[in-house]
Image (cartoon, rainbow over all chains, first blue to last red; front, side, top):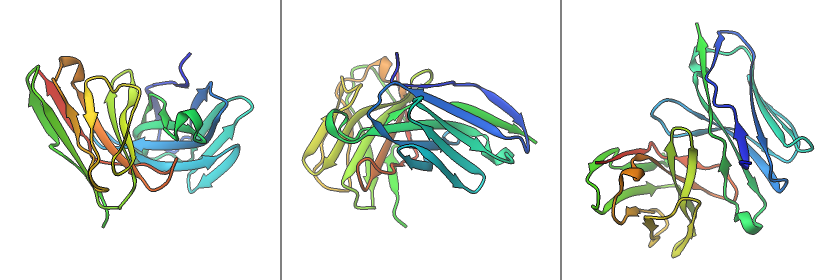
Length: 114
Length: 112
């Protein structure tokens, strides 16, 4: 079983739709959870950063972490064509054997159609 | 503005040649990382450094090496390039561990 599983999609939605992106993980030591957005032929850029469980909201984006289910989600409200990109989840444990490294999901390709 | 740059942006080389990819950041971050990104595999960590003279192997380090002689630079060397090393390479840096990693624009490497 991979440490981090992410459905690669592709996911295609109409403009204005609510988008739900998800990752599951197997390492219960993960405490830090991030979502990165990557436009075509560009480097990833951080969207959301969450520590432990709970929700975090930033504009149209909401990140949720459910540690009991080992499941994280990113919701995009009122999706726009400019949201079309690959979304990568990333996670890290608190030092120890992981040495603070990030483990990434494979990414989900999202297209928002006007 | 502080930034992270990579050079070259595109590189074509032949099997067996030594190749060095440059990464330079102006944030004065102690932590720097090299990843490769391939279809079906996502981002995989090659090497990382938490300070000058510190280097550590990631999950796909075979055939690659790094050295850290100053805070700003972490060059990645492919000792003897192989076709399996054709990929897009990203450098990243962060201020804290684990912290927000800022990625460079990437280097697209083709090994023929």
